[in-house]
Image (cartoon, one colour):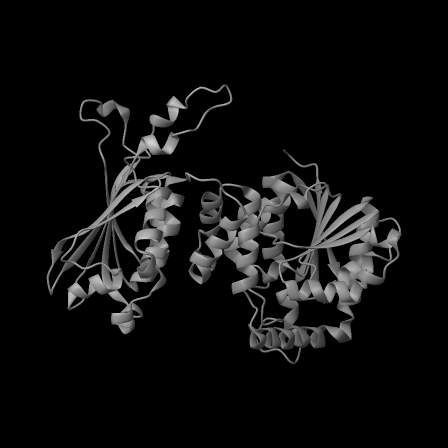
Length: 471
């Protein structure tokens, strides 16, 4: 298997300084699973090409390993690991091109920080999911992609198209960024890893993926395939949200101001108190005993629910550590009696990633939460809450944008909170809720919160989902 790196940045032979490999030499290195060779088939001022070849030794892969019956693992010899790009190639990139991937080039420091034209070719590259997945992974990162299927066997055309492809990626970026993209995404395309996945792999993915992974539209698939285990993938995605989300002090201050603005608008209507009271009464009417408040923020809803003796178990979920700390202070968890403390917990977690801690609740509440979710991630929220967690009931409240016309301080089209991704009309909210109910087997009813305006409706709209529709 090989990786070819080419550039037309002049002088192109400076690629040797970036890779820390002299174009005049052949560079060999032994790894614990095989051997690598780096050489330059072309090294001219206009074009320079470097090739990293990896020869995986199948004997080394299984030497000394036994199965549960003490027999040799013969089946480990019969696989594509010695012939196809995989996590072995990622490890080779990290070890043999370590300095290049880290952006260290003492002789060309400015060039290491410069975006240059690059053409990367990997062959043969397993593409689990085909060319569509290949494009979904690399196009958002700015790559132009071309690929050709590697024939399985000229004499067996009826075998169908090979999942192995020769892939060429063209881009304009720093070499260190391109190598990092390959390091993460090659195992994702192969959908397999040759070594044990543990907690340290979460930190490795965060370190290598960083901000580009946080903004990638396929980050759930990337984390899931890279880490293999749902628990690790969930942890990585939550850490990404925390590390690269709204964490800067200036952004937090702006968010607090936006929240204060929303509260100022709604305060004369007493909406906050009404929402909490009505949600608590609906939970009692539904007969809920165990409740999870998703997107609990600083714990205002949790504080109200703790007053209800009919609730035996109350849990809050929030992705922001800062908000969770506020919730803990508001609830005074450290000063609760043992019996009260046993009723409540707060966890860091996201409402768009599957999490087994969300299972086995009578009800899940999302009070003024969905409007903070990017519209393209509402499908993930639906899957997590209604399909995976699948509680007995779900209560969702959200602003009614039509009612905003009654606020003198608001301009047309303005949203109540700076972090709101959208605000729905009554028709839009009902359409979404009814669609969720039909798809996931919930009966949905709607109730207003706040005084109902004869033209614009209530300031807050609420949907109550009860499991029991068509499965």
